[in-house]
Length: 128
Image 1 (cartoon, one colour):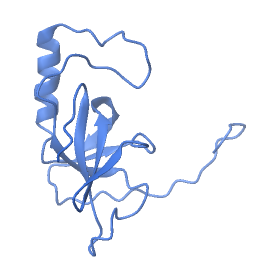
Image 2 (cartoon, helix red, strand yellow):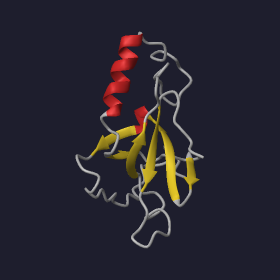
Image 3 (tube, one colour):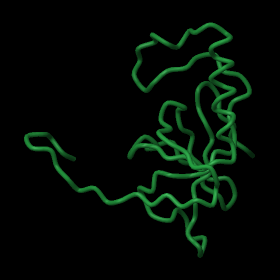
């Protein structure tokens, strides 16, 4: 069985550590794009506002073409954007991410992206 992305989602393979015991570290927001949807009908963010969801077909095809260039490349996303989107296929772990969650990519799968720990707290904010 293989789960395929639909809508404005990307299928990203999560890296495993060198001993194959699962993700290298919980919270490592990086992986390799392995699949994009065949067709895109909308492009939106996590919010329910649909201001950009019903674009012209040419705009959607251009977006799909651009995100298709990320297949086989390492991508990075913000912390917690992958929450509740992980799944396993065989021994591999994947995540379905919204295209707008991708904040960067590397030129090679082999380039390592090491997130730094950030435990800063904003003054006066509610921190979980």
